[in-house]
Amino acid sequence: MIGEIAFIPQAEGPARDIVAKAVAEIDAQGLRFQVGALGTSVEGDLDAILDAVRAIESRVRAEGVRRGVIEVRLQLEPHEETLEHQVGGIGAAVT
Image 1 (cartoon, rainbow, N blue to C red):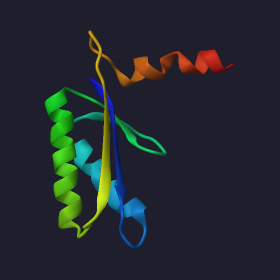
Image 2: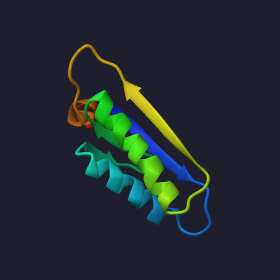
Image 3: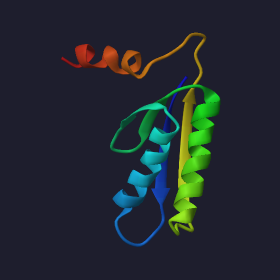
């Protein structure tokens, strides 16, 4: 399964540091991922993706973030999907 996780903190100071910690939690779950400008694409099974979301929530609260939004989008397919397959044909179509 592939999906996208975006964490939008509502905190003072630079958001990049907080978002980097959220991405570290995705990495710690062993998911394949690609960081994008507006979210992080992930590849893994549903339980691992949801575990990453739970880990992000715990980590950012431990870091003192009291408010924020975690957005999760999941793509359901009848077959296994990879990050490369999803974006593979886009570059050729744009030329």
